[in-house]
Image (cartoon, rainbow, N blue to C red; front, top):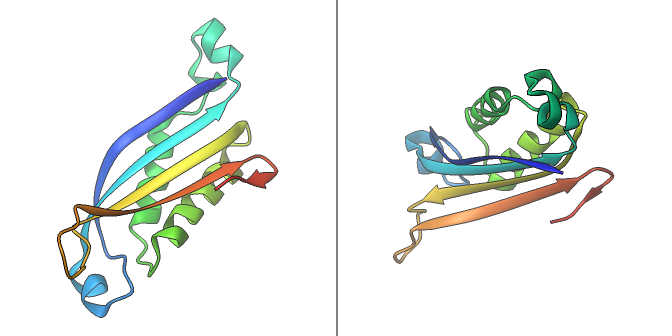
Length: 123
């Protein structure tokens, strides 16, 4: 099993249930982990035998650019696209953190994680 991770991807986006969140935006951090069997990449040093993380980044960036009320929905769209466009991926885990969410007290980040495994959601 090969794990491919993109950590601490930073985006400015317009996600939230409040009007001011959708109008003003906020800073977000995304962590992505995909797993699968990629013997061609391991044994033959061949990019075609794995998942290109530039393409993974592009999916995350495109979905982060679409305003949504819920981070769960954004993460779900990311999972759906990766699982649809990269058939050899067997597991996906996406965590999206909203930095300094609008709460009445100090909070560094609110965070949502969506996990997917072929044939079943796991979280």
